[in-house]
Amino acid sequence: MFNKFIASILPYFPKKFIWIFSRAYISGVTMEDAMRVSKELNSRGMKVTLDVLGEFIKSLDEAEENKQEYLDLIEVTEKNGINGNYSLKPTSFGLLIDKERCYSHMREIVAKAASYNNFCRIDMEDSKCTDLEIELYRRLHAEFPQNVGLVLQAYMKRTLNDLENMLDMNTPDIPANYRLCKGIYVEPAEIAYKKYEEINDHYLEDLEFMFRNRIYAGIATHDRPLIEGAYELIRKYNVPKDMYEFQMLYGVTPKLRQSIVDAGHVMRVYVPFGEKWFGYSTRRLKENPKMASHIIKAIFYKG
Image (cartoon, rainbow, N blue to C red):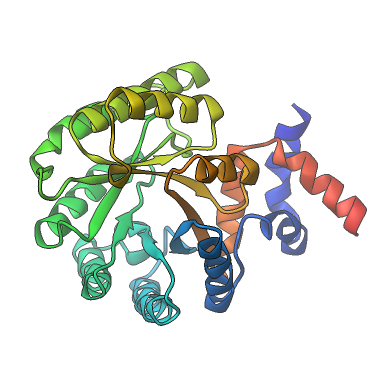
């Protein structure tokens, strides 16, 4: 209860206090920070996915700025020889303002990545965006089947049906590519599972469906039981190493992350950066209130 209380009030603290917590989970404010962290992770045998922080914008001018930042990011990333791809939040390109403008911006980014034979992942946001983001994925996949993927959230009750409904985009030559995560947005019980055990059960059910249908799986979790469950499914279906990867957030469970790499599995680390770090940080805090006690300790011990 104490952690939840602290987590609820910390977003109202001065940003310099929140940064004490945030700097462990964000590569930095600048593109140079993201390149430095990405090179370090690459040197330790891990791939990355780069994310420019910012979402739920209020104007199309912001959408244009975000698009240009991603185009610049792709150029810089490729010039630095980074082994990584790109994560895109549709609301940061105006999805809830003008979905056609959003599509145009994201198509330009995906086309830029495709010109380097690289890949973009469409992040899944809250439930009001789900259908719009699946529609966006379908449109981009039709033109760039090897260069675009989607995130799915296991706590949503619709996810298995969504997987089934998107099987038409999965072919033996070009498998569909989905990152499966638990989900972090606060959703009503009518549409989302709430209990830890049932979320985990449905996560593994979704993952098994993906393996059974030869869909490329990004196994995005820091939960040891889910990782062990994924190992069992990989063995059960004899999934080749080029058909899945584990994915984790930068700064979270580094020892567990390293154990997966040491076991010979592909690992991709989500590397967020940018000046709009505050919203991302407070979301992480709401997702895991236990972090609140670490922030309080950091404030007192480090001043």
